[in-house]
Length: 153
Image (cartoon, rainbow, N blue to C red; front, side, top):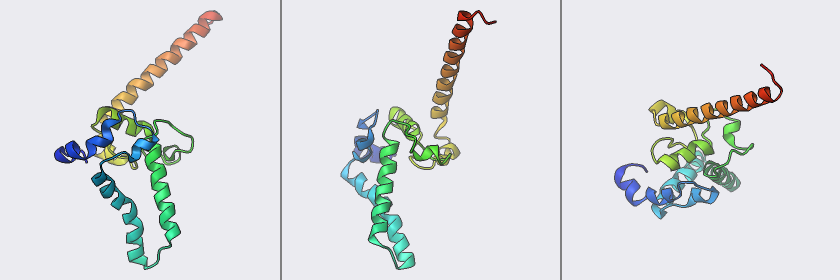
């Protein structure tokens, strides 16, 4: 969706939100909804074609799980129930927030190893390193203040 004409005429609508929220996950051009919707329901239909048996409840559960994943990735929050807290290689909201902020990189909302393997997460990794360094500096400053308060050397 980030290829020239596809982005300009279709996917750019989804990127109107640079700080996405849950419902923005489904805010997209109708053609994009159709294309991505086929990906969502394609799995159950392939399973049905292979096994010749698929219960409608299975399809509903799969769709609900995919919607949960999309809303979670676009929520802007790191919820304790977010999949990336349980599955180390799963992309979370911070990963996808960078994508909406920078428009380039961190394309995956699921398996972040693809972004790592293809090098599309380098900008994100630099930003995370700066954020972590700033947190460490703030913590060190806080400890220095406590040490000064109690005259600890």
